[in-house]
Amino acid sequence: MEFEDMQKIWNADSQQFAYAIDEDAMYQRILAKKKGSKRTVNKMEWFLMAVNVLAGAVILGKNILKDLHNPYLYAMTGLLIVASGYIFWRRKQRLAGENHFDRSITGDLDHAIRNAQYRERLSLSAFFYATPLFALIFWSAYKDNESTIFLVGIALLFVVTIVLSIFEHRFIHMRYRKRLEKMKKMLENG
Image (cartoon, rainbow, N blue to C red; front, side, top):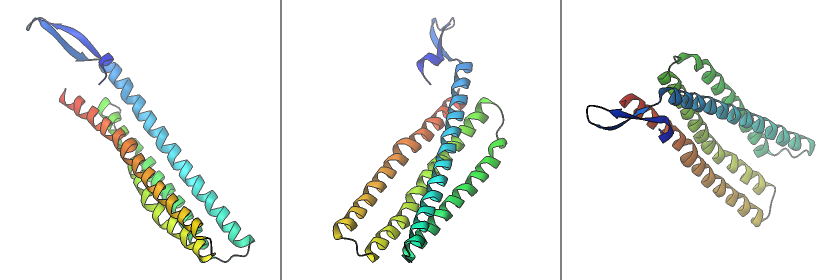
């Protein structure tokens, strides 16, 4: 809770100041977190679906138009399309569960926490999805007799992507969820 959300109240029994939480300010903050979390999850889902479908279409088109018949490129296209379908399926499940929360401070906070957990899992699944994708990219380049420097570049790109993915997961998504859970504990403890 931020200091602005608290009010200084004189406690006549103890003859000192006590602090109380401004419930309206807290509820507005929770609603803003809920809307922000939902908006972020929507953007992540649409972005990931669009990128996967577009990349899959480009790779498939290149493989067909250039008459490459590279099995790794076909597998990569399949992986990208399946990933996009999986994200779409998970999105439908998430949206179906949207109306199961009551319209109260705790219900809206639970809704925000659930969206944050979903966002965290989506980030984690992208981390695991990158490994087979990079393996297919690497083997496709290897099959095409690319230079050693190019193959090392792909490996370095994979390592950087994994490091950034871990950073994003831990320092953005996990922290956001933990802040919401901390807010919930504060609310429950009074």
